[in-house]
Length: 387
Image (cartoon, rainbow, N blue to C red; front, side, top):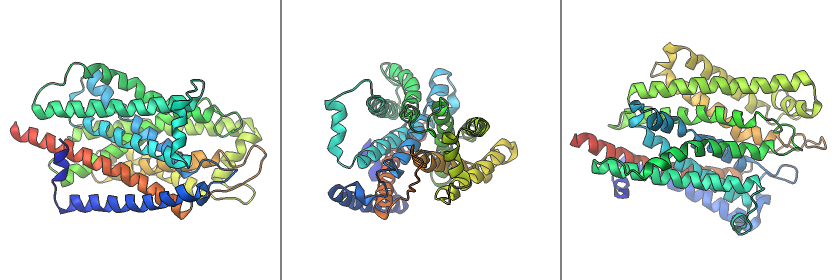
């Protein structure tokens, strides 16, 4: 079926060329990092996780969100999601690929990744993160490709794929839960030391992933013959609405606990985020942009008139996606280091090579996603034509 990705119009191949250029630029920067080391980045002794791990954390949530399509469609026979479930599974494939790529570039030396396999340590959360991420990637590749192949032949999916589908549902929850445990299991970092970290991760995941999928569906509806159906898009929009409300509520719970208890170790991080700390305000603009975007998204999503409007819905979904990208992809990771356990402040900003590599990994993910979506949409268009 991959041959279907080799056909398309000028815009399609122009987009592919653009992604390949970004990927090439990112790879050139990565070769410099591989030669020089992580000193080429903005990370330091005090801040050892930066934008790479931030993007990894955010994208794990986007990958996990596929369960919000798989669960209603396969467990509750919600046929409205029939056309877009495959899009959610392929989005998970591209997202997990980016997650693993960000881990590789963050390691400095890629060979270090093999230490997890050569010296497995089941008492380490990192070991289980490797297991669940790679397992989820394999599951979605097998499920998505097998079901799409069956649709192409006009036959029902083979029976052996059904258990894998059921297995993928709790597995999707596990990838973001285990990732959250990477943070909440570190006692020296007050910003991350909270039992609500895993629920926060899942709440934001079920908002960010479906919001991105809605944007893709609206784009495909406008520029291709593929139409996911307005009812399916609206159902996804309701999922985004409730998930975003829950995500914001969890953050407010954190703020109440921190400031009502008045424990300095926990207060300093949030104070740094919202108003700055001792003259350091590196992340304050990002945090307030996040707040404004979240408020705009909630206003547009909670109001049925704007949620059902094809003009305002994409604005709301874009606001959700970028608000949660800022929260999980930037502020969550970096703020955990500011201030340090010794109450020193070292601010972080990514370097040009670091941003180039990050852009390259995102280009890789969108390249994979474009090819998979091209195959899926072509198969579904052929199926509709034959019907």
